Length: 100
Image (tube, rainbow, N blue to C red; front, side, top):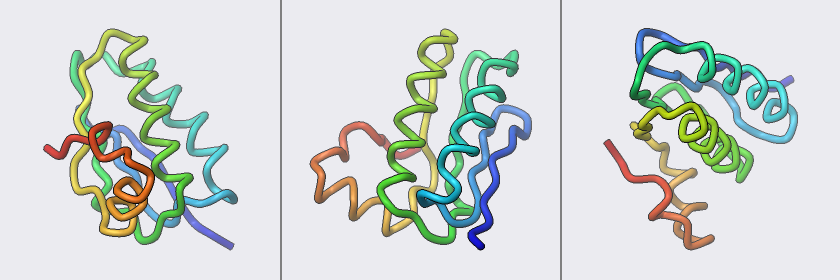
């Protein structure tokens, strides 16, 4: 079974584990709640702990970015893994994930 997590540590939303169809829905709900509850004006989505990702990982990032924007928070993506970068390049979505 795939293991994945999302947690808020200070001003960082930390993603870890395997991001795929088995983990995506739960992570989406958890991350949305964490973003909404954070008092920070700016958040970093840190992907350093991501072991493997399908296109679900990019979908999660886009969702989290929309959530942050809706909450009036600036957002930055950090440590995008190689497989996520490749998917972004193939789909023409690299401009949506500026690296910090």
